[in-house]
Image (cartoon, rainbow, N blue to C red):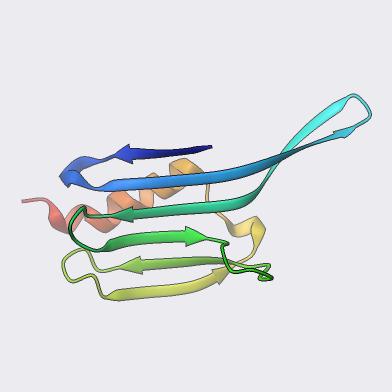
Length: 102
């Protein structure tokens, strides 16, 4: 899955996921193994990043940037079970960008 979501205030959220299909008897299971969510202000700076792009790293990285300055205000490493759903990423992005409302 790959695409962009155009949000309020001109913000763009880019989403990438790669998935594997596995079978257990007749049961089909779909599991995502590669995640990237990056939100930014076009022509500006990043607002939010979730990813597992570091080779050999079993953790997921979560970074939040101040919506007005672009300064990183949060960095944490997450385990697979902590990785957010797409709707949770949208909810977090909405909270981060509330200060942009005029």
